[in-house]
Length: 537
Image 1 (cartoon, rainbow, N blue to C red):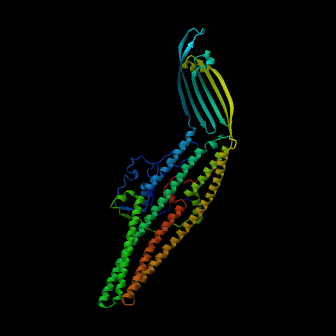
Image 2: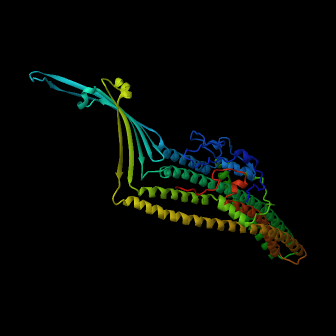
């Protein structure tokens, strides 16, 4: 199924913002290059810690806003998103930390010694006090290669050993040592496992961020349409109150002239009070939803006394039909962030199996050391003499193995059992995705049918009210029946608007459940490519 933006919304501004939540990390040996062209949801920009950069140009006050603007403003200003988008950058620091294991290391040591004592001549008849001083130094550069090879270059200098004192007063030695792991620690897979796990953690945070962004977009859209519905309900109830007041006035006039019994007046007056009570509750709902919408799209406006929000988008039924259910399920299995996270966790488990399997092996390392040693009466001269110095070569094997090896066996068993859990969890998440998408698909179809049904009901309720009022004017109905017909009409009018907004919300929920909401809204974010299981060894 090819995902295209089919919303009736005009997402022209979305392409400019592009929602660069963070750059996707690559599973290569070198660390990924991070770039971001937008401050909306990309790499966080420097801040003085007082005013969030995203709200610096967002004045508080009345707002007239479309649903497109509401979504984009929320992506720019929402504080929860600004917190979440830091996670991939934080996780990337762990990649660099693991990468540092293969960085060259330089170590150096310099020491000065001084000794004093009495010196006796050969005939032991005279003696004198002696004072000897010496300086020693050592410098080493070493690096671990992902194959399990350690390369070390070191240079040492110091006083000549007493047994070789005739050779000179200063000894300088340069040596190159290569150590290769033969069993434990051998191979690229095991040595890069920690780095690859760190990169998977970064990808996990990106999928998590994508899921959070999709949830935020869905929440903004749902709240926007709920706010539109609540405002429309206030308008309907206000018109209903006016109609009930007119009915009361007419009933009062007819009671005054004797056309109706005075008992009819109580029903009309009760209806006015009932409509006024419903209108109060509806206005409170509008205020509640407005505060919720403002928090999502412009948190700074909550501190303003004047934060009226006027929605410009009207709820209309989406013209394009849904694709077959199987195609939506296929999209969900490919794009759902939580499912991709589960796949990455399985990959991490694969890497843990590689590490623990290698940990069962004994430690056996082969080392080769090639050196040159020069003797002279000074450090500088001994360095110059290294080319003609004495050669030495050392080759050997080191071996180490804990006899019981219980710790390594326990780690291996834990990794195997955990991997079984992860594989089972992955299958469970796939089943949940299928169920979520199918239920959401059913709800979209139900909501669409309700739109036509409620429109028909509202039409007949209007006819019913006209007929009831006509009968009331000729004395063949009562104020109570007229009030009932008015209440039924109000309910049908609210239901008609609610059916349309519910249909739009159901479509949003379907796209959220299949993980394509950002794509369908023309927004890009990390975590779009599905996680593919790679061979860990």
